Amino acid sequence: MKYYSTNKQAPDASLEEAVVKGLAADKGLFMPYSIKPLPQDFYDSIDTLSFQEIAYRVADAFFGEDVPAETLKQIVYDTLNFDVPLVKVTEDIYSLELFHGPTLAFKDVGGRFMARLLGYFIRKEGKKQVNVLVATSGDTGSAVANGFLGVEGIHVYVLYPKGKVSEIQEKQFTTLGQNITALEIDGTFDDCQALVKSAFMDKELNEHLQLTSANSINVARFLPQAFYYFYAYAQLKKLGKANDAVICVPSGNFGNITAGLFGKRMGLPVKRFIAANNRNDIFYQYLQTGVYTPRPSIATIANAMDVGDPSNFARVLDLYGGSHAAISAEISGTTYTNEQIAETMRETWKECHYLLDPHGACGFRALKEGLKPGETGVFLETAHPAKFLETVEGIIGETVEIPAKLKAFMQGEKQSLSMTKEFADFKSYLLSL
Ligand SMILES: *Cc1c(COP(=O)(O)O)cnc(C)c1O
Image (cartoon, rainbow, N blue to C red):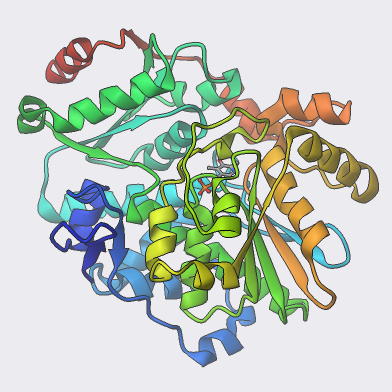
C-alpha cells in the first residue's frame, strides 16, 4: 500500500519508506491510501477469536500487501504477548487495561510492533545496522527501548534530560543494556529533541550512519493501536453489551484515539468517541469553536497528556476531509483540572475499589458524566497507576502495590552516558561509534 502525506506536498511512500522516514519530506504525517472495511462475518464472529487472531486480521488490512502473511502473523503474535483485559468498574463503564505489557503503558503495543517491522525490513534489504534516535521526557523512551530490546540489526539511543525524569521512568531505559544506550543530556527535553532533529538533518552523519526515528507519529507505532479497539468490542460482545458502545480515550498527541477512528472507518461498530483532555484542552476548544489554536503546554498530574499542539490532529482533520461538522459528529471532548482528576481517583477508589491512574481518571470521568441511557462506556486505562506512584499515593492516602515488572526495573543498575547539550559533542560521539 502507498502512503501519502497530510501536507500533500511530498511524493507517495511505500510502507518501508514511511516507517524508516517517520515524517514525510514536507513535514506532514503519512496516511494509508485506503482504510479497508472488514467483512461482516468477521464482526459476527469476533467474540470467538483471540486477541492475536483479531489483531492479525486488522494488521492484514493495513500491511498485508507489503509483508508476507507468515511474517506479519509472527510480528503481531510476538508484539501481543500480553493481555488487554476489559474490566468492569461500574454497571455500564469498563476499563480497557492497556498496562499489562513490559513498561505498563499502552505505548508498548506500538513500540513492540514498530521494532519488529523495522527488523523485518532490515533483514530483507540486508542493511547494515540501523540506529534509532529517540528523545524522551519519560514514557516514550521506555516503551521504545523495551520494544526494540534484543532486536537484531538495530541499536537504540535514548536521549533524556538529566534530573527531569522520575527514577522509575529512568530505570526503565537505563538498565537494559544490549542494544540500548541511554544518553543523559545536561539540558531540557527540548534540548534532547533538538539534538535528534539536528542529527537527522546533518549530511555527514547521515552518510556515515543509517539513522531513523521512532517517533509516535510513525505509522508503524500509530496503526497497531487500532488492534485493541477491536478486542475491546469483542469482549463487550461476549458480555452482551456491544450495542451503543462509547469509547473514551485520554488524549495528548491524539495518536491513540486516531487509531480508534481508523477502526470505526473499518466498520467497527462504535457509536461515538470521547477525547478526554486535562487542562491542555486544545482539541476540546477546537470542537467548541471550529478553530484550532495551539498553545504552549501546561504541566498537570496527567503529564503524558501535557501537549499544546497535538501532532496527530493533522490525521484527524485529513480523515474527516477537514470538516469540523463531521469531526464533532463522531467525537466529543472533555477537559479536567488537576483537582477534578484527583477527586475522580479518590471517589472511584472508595466507591468502586478501582484504582485509576491520572490519565485513565480523565477517561472514566468523561463517561460517568457523559453516558446516555442504554450506552455502554469503555475508557482506555493507558498506564498502570504505580507508574505515577507519588502522585497516586498522595491522592488516595494509601500505599500502592508495585507490580513485579516495575520492581524488577527498579532493582536494575542504571547505566548511562553523560553528555552536554552541544550538537558537536553528540555528533562526534555518533561518528566515533
Ligand atoms: C502517551 C500517553 C497518553 C496520550 O496518548 P496520545 O496517543 O498521545 O494521545 C495518555 N496516557 C498515557 C499514560 C500515555 O503514556
